[in-house]
Image 1 (tube, each protein chain N blue to C red):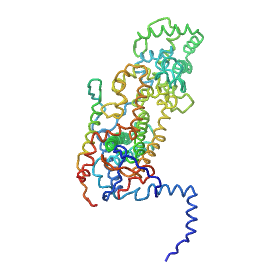
Image 2 (image 1 turned 90 degrees about the horizontal axis):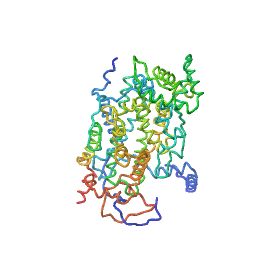
Image 3 (image 1 turned 90 degrees about the vertical axis):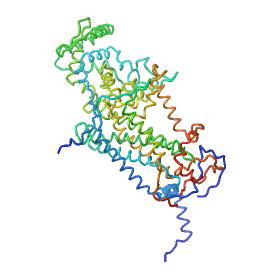
Image 4 (image 1 turned 120 degrees about the vertical axis):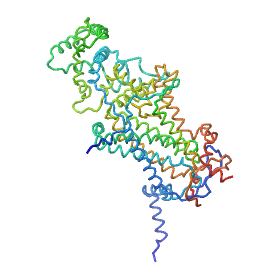
Length: 321
Length: 56
Length: 230
């Protein structure tokens, strides 16, 4: 194919490469690729034999409520009274105002809005309770609660939240100090029993009939608990422990996320309410820079400045004299 | 047929070992991986690449 | 003795090919990647360093990730929790991912210090970087598909970063079904396609020549690529 327009421009060693006019040698591409594949296979099989892989059992609502029913009850009242992490999250789950992150005036989170509706009071507490059969005390409690005015409900919720902060576990039973919390004691007590029996786990998932593959609600519920957070911290997986890079146990994790998690550890991000969007934007920018290195003067000169290439092509440079 | 030979020889499921240096906290496992990456890179560029046939 | 075609017939066939979509695409592909460029049997003599094998090692890692992932897919996402063979295959899948990234990063470092984007190879560099990012996404969706505590933790933590960008409305880390399908269908397809494109670009442009500080003027705009080592 002949070329018609050939312009000349000044050679830039960071952008241009001379055509090769020198010699060549025989080279078996397929053999090299095959050997590389075999080498990697041996390494992988070897390490799989040596170290295996981690498999810490998932935490269900049942395991959580059984392990720490007080924490379960405390989390549940915060879901009912709208103070939990999920209830105050805002988009994409609900319209709570004040939690969305922004970069200056731009809040994509708010603009895009609610696409995964989650109403914790209804989805985590009232809904599952309404499915309980053959428990007239629960039905009565629910009727009383639903018939009450919003301010009465709030008063009961507030009093229960105060009381349950002094709750105890006696012979496996949740014991909450008495207080003016109306039907809520029965409601949360029943909810705790449901949780310990495993009934809540399926209630959370089977939101659209029989099959369920979407664990949004149960995961949000579990993640609101102190119990779950403590598990994460115990495994050194928390954000302030550089957890993003880590794996459970002594397994290597995701070392390539080092820079992403690094920003969260230093000011201003470490104390920023908008840390997530700020770090995402910064990493997005750095990723763009990496992508566009070939076009960025200075950045694309680093290979020439650092002279590491002198080792890679030492035979060639030696032959050039 | 027992498949117990497939179980891991070295149990890494124990509490992780972490190194602390200022604000940096990193698992020993990750340090080893990163260290190996740097070492292998340096070896790759410094170890002579002898070709059996140097025909032109 | 063979009969040769009449020149007019040849001209007609040529014109027909030039009109056809098939003919034009085939000509484009064959011109860009003739067989001896696609599968060369020679390499330039300046290729004399172990750093050059890391691309192939990365592909080896990727092949193993896909092979082990295929075995896991055969039995479904819960198999490895209840089977020793399943756990072993899962271990192989984990370690092949570690090696995939291990070799890819070294390959990236090598290509950076070689300034391998030179000589109109910007797209080769860029497809490599994009593949890196898609691979991270594939790894992330894999982690949240494990159906164990790790999945739960990673999903509930990562959701905050994803939600902050607004993408959380569409990419729901807590939706196991969605994450699993991204992990076994969408992202592997993307990674394989991008890797394929990256490799074809390397074959098309050839391996970049050593950095020269005192080069001559270079042809620019629509010239033959500086690619033929043989």
